[in-house]
Length: 389
Ligand SMILES: COc1cccc(CC(=N)NC(=O)c2cccnc2OC2CCNCC2)c1
Image 1 (tube, rainbow, N blue to C red):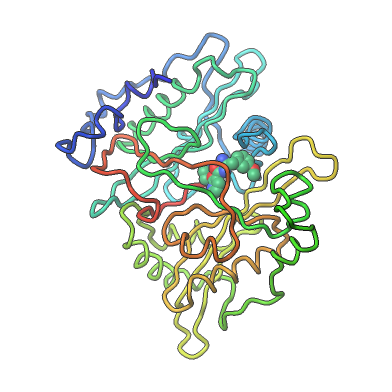
Image 2 (image 1 turned 90 degrees about the horizontal axis):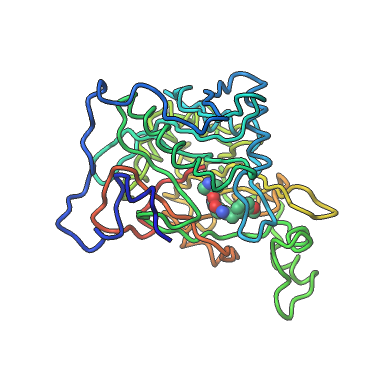
């Protein structure tokens, strides 16, 4: 279980966990750009780097197909994330993105894309410091090329390209424990279509429960309950930015969103992200906000269903409407939009509604990591205000 690669990296090391003399903040200082390795790392002979221009329909199709067939599966290999093409274009082209951070590995002879890793720039506040980081995501190696130690060289290459842009920190998540989590989140699922979830093996019929009793248990009203609850619109960006920036101050680690970021990450985009807000019917003030992103999963080996339509809780702010009621309205609109399940992590204030809104705990954990930034203490999930895609 040794972390041969991670022990060589500027990340919190398990051996340092007790040592509270180590200061919070960057582990290594930036190096002069002239000293950053100018040429790409070496790949095994048959392979070459390819910068993936996601504006190219052909290239974004290849990326979509690689991930569809080779990206993260649940522990029992019953489901595989199936990010849509439009989701990937959204996730990879935020304000200030770098094409050079969309990195592919292809076979020199066949030009076949066999691996992928990405970064996007993000302003992340850690306590009182705002740090420009790379959010690293979508690390994927073709199933047939696993344990060729491609991942370490891909991580070094994205790190090198991030350094070339004078950025020295990164944030990432993983389902596995690496040196060293800043926090470890439990994920939770709320059934919206219990019959399908049981048919495909995502959920099991509870003990002493019939299917009709289960359907009734998860039934939701047809209409939302909160007066003034409506979809977010472009003219709401300034008010939502103010509301969200004020709320995210509560957390130790959180994005430092400006209006451009809010416009990109939170304006509704069909089949990608849904966001709703509460506009007070009296004062027209925007008092609350909720959002979720669309990440279907392929269902591997089921006769009747091939896709699970899943909503993932994103950023939610409640200042007047109780969070419980706000999130119940989110469940209602998700059900109305044919989502089968609504997922959430126990981050921010989510634990205040999970059990009451009939979320059940998932069978895995999601670990959050910072690269080249040490925190004095591991965080509670409720201290984390960052949701990665
Ligand atoms: C249901 O289909 C699945 C297909 C692949 C993996 C998993 C389990 C899993 N690993 N779930 C999560 O990581 C997860 C559970 C709740 C909320 N966000 C999550 O992950 C997000 C954030 C990290 N990048 C992937 C999507 C489920």
